[in-house]
Image (cartoon, rainbow, N blue to C red):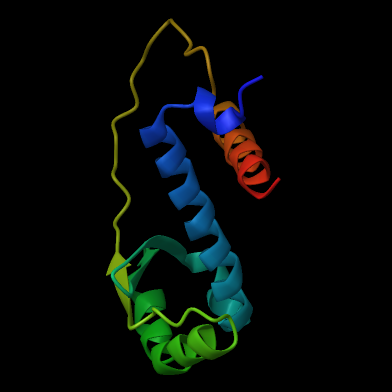
Length: 130
């Protein structure tokens, strides 16, 4: 019997592993954010010691900038993210798409696709730790 990691395309497995890592950082991050800011940020990337956080509103980005030095220090010391050198904030404006009028429905809804990705990440996480 094959191990699940042998059945998945290596690039897909790497992508899922990275998604799990970013989700883990997000969970650690929200512990140290002020409560009023927690719902307005997501972890976009973590490469070469630079953590990039996305928000859709410049107002929230400005408020978070005041907390960055303390946040960086807490993540390094208490969460042992020693490789963390800097935290950057990126304002990502949501794209407006003109709704399409179509008689056909798509076969999978976004929530179904998100659920499938979540289940895949969980399966890979259990396979790599088990």
